[in-house]
Amino acid sequence: MEQLKQLFKGQHVFNLSAIERKAGIRKLKLHEFVNGKAELSHSECLKINKIVENATKLQK
Image (cartoon, rainbow, N blue to C red; front, side):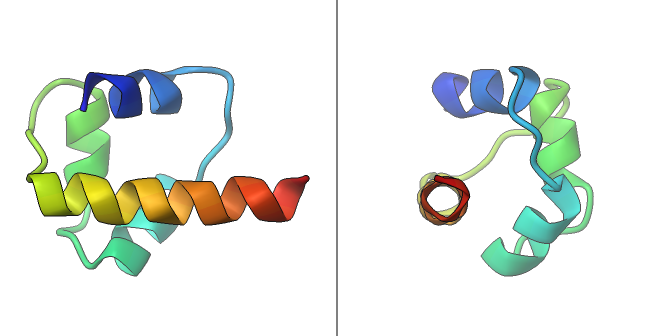
């Protein structure tokens, strides 16, 4: 989870709202997670990781 948080705080540019929609998680929850105000479940992290992996593959 900490790696995921660092990824979003890093230099990568991701549309957090789009990731929330694709992962089916509550609106703004990912924003709150990045800012340390919310936690994500293991399954939510897995979904988000998969979305980010697919997005980065498309960028290459």
